[in-house]
Amino acid sequence: MNLRLQAELDLSFILEDATNGFGWPATITDPSGKTDSFVVQSNDISQIIDPDTGQAVSGRSASASVRISTLTAKGFALPQGIADSGSKPWIIEFDDISLNPFKFKVAQSNPDRTLGIVSCLLELYK
Image 1 (cartoon, rainbow, N blue to C red):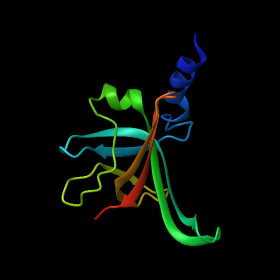
Image 2 (image 1 turned 30 degrees about the vertical axis):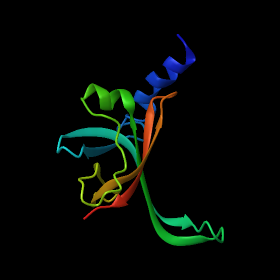
Image 3 (image 1 turned 135 degrees about the horizontal axis):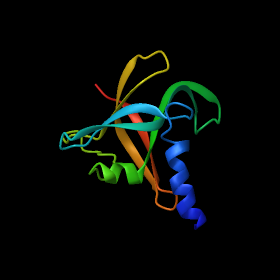
Image 4 (image 1 turned 120 degrees about the vertical axis):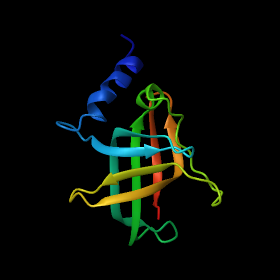
């Protein structure tokens, strides 16, 4: 089997294994309101690097990565950041390690079509 195809298949374990891997349950909602459960790799950290000074500062950086083939199998397009505040955004919801729920909107979407993964940079959504 081609290594690219094997790497995409390996994502099912690396990305979506919530029992033995780094997978974490999440809910994704597209702008039309379609929603479904996914297993993603997520993070939500409170230290970022200030691009002007290069120093670590307090801030919030959240992201979620999801397998493209799982999105398409469930009838979803690739998530996108929607800059228009009057339009409904893509929403990704997941709990932190203490099971506190958080709701985020997709600010930026970075698909890797070689490997078959889309990484989404998130902003807290109210």
